[in-house]
Image 1 (cartoon, rainbow, N blue to C red):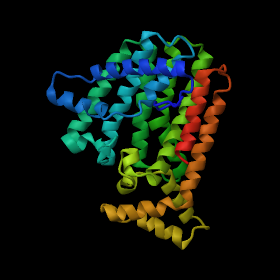
Image 2: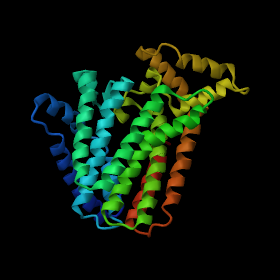
Image 3: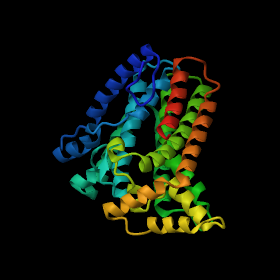
Length: 335
């Protein structure tokens, strides 16, 4: 069976069950972003209506299958992680000046920066309301995840400290900005399905590693795929000076004793004025051919394999198979 979800689901019974539950999450998600105020309602619905992979809630539903996945709390937890993710997108797009998100104009392009930021805050508030019904432990986990999301964005914004390795700094940013919420998504599913603590720890560790691998794969895709495929403008991070792994690896090589004049010329191109589409296209095309892209792909593959290794303690079955297939699909996605 070919799955239409963000996670490959080869088992048809599991696929049908999760598809039905994901539809319930979608319904609850739309209810959660509804506001009496027309502006808040329109802005909050903007990214929900634009669609998306719904990777995080699906991961919550999937890991819950390791226990009692039919519990009401599992659906609530899935709604929480997607609301949190959507909120971060409103904020990230303002900070990155990204014009497009999920194939639609970014919220700040429609309503301006202030409305977009406040809409993200509204979604965080709705996520907090929902997680409060899941108990104190869930609130503490959500708060810790939110803290890491903020720290990741902060550290990305200010960059590495003097003497700090830029690549190591970037990997920590990815762990905080992406890995933390994917880890919490997997954790919530197993936790609210009543799984044993060791199972919860196992899927949490998997989520953390696969989250970083996922973002490294995105760094590759941003340079190698067309905007129609990703729903984002290729090279947006380059234009805004946001670090990505290929650019960091290139810069490290250019600054080293083994750096060539060609390496330094490419760095100068990336540091030039990329506000025009032609200049940006030239920079994307040049970096796309650099060895740093293949090195980034290799790092994503290695992390995906490490994530799979974390799953060793889980019992064999369709849930474990789906998690492994997700990691494998991520590798294929970056190839």
